[in-house]
Amino acid sequence: MLCLLVFIVIRSKMNTNEFKNKVLSLSDRLYPMVFRMLRNNENAQDAVQVIMMKLWDKRKQLGKHSNVAGFVFLTARNYCMDVLKKKNLEIDDLELRIHFLESGKTVLEELEQKELNNLVRRIIETLPKQQREVIILRELDGLEFKEITEITDLKVEHIRVLLSRARKTVSIELNKIYSYEQEKV
Image 1 (cartoon, helix red, strand yellow):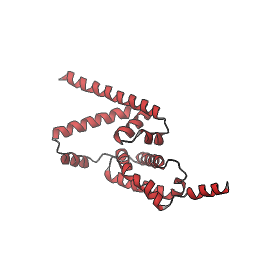
Image 2 (tube, helix red, strand yellow):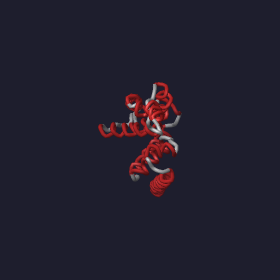
Image 3 (cartoon, one colour):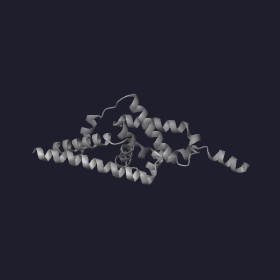
Image 4 (cartoon, one colour):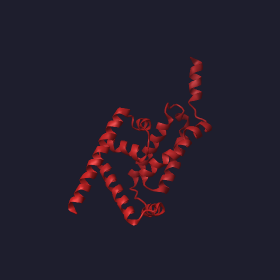
């Protein structure tokens, strides 16, 4: 029994290599979620660095978690929510414009895409909290159901239902908007 306890205590401390492999390796997957939430490249890069430093400070406790990746994403989400509460960040229009110019889209295509993105974003903002969170994590951040489960503490079945309802609502609202636009013409 004592040997098991000693093993658990020793095992619970995450060393530098384990931190690199289990936590730092997630930073590339973490960045899109942080960027989507903060809507600014520089703020997102800074946030990922701050999150990694916070996780480094908690590396001893990280070894105790059965799901390190889930804890990392949850920590990032909570940090971004705190940042957004402190100040309202705006989208950097110049950065978006450069992105569209580099993509080779025409001005009309750029405007149509921007309008569609704004419509979808507004519709998503009206969804109930859990539906909004699940559709953003799945569709915008590209997370797998298992990762969403770890972040939200919801069962996969519940996530699928929430995602289905959110997608249906977005589709219905977009159809309402576009059918109205077609009737006006």
